[in-house]
Image (tube, rainbow, N blue to C red; front, side, top):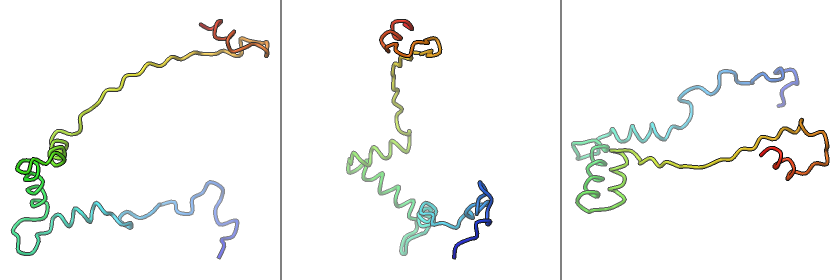
Length: 111
């Protein structure tokens, strides 16, 4: 069923309050909740077992991917500086009344 043309004024939202918080599927929340659970037959929650497994792979098995993950979580990713040089030329077209002037002439005049 189509809404009448007068349902909303131009620029007016049909849903001014937006979607209610918590109404969508939140995978992060579900994963965090699952990590808090204690698996059957174990004494520690999944998150503790996960950390132990990751550290075992990094330190005992010498798995480089696991080592990188541990270091990234402990120290954070290293920052990388990026240097660049930008040249900006300002053209003042209002200064040139002749429409037939070439860009080379403008470059020579402005430089």
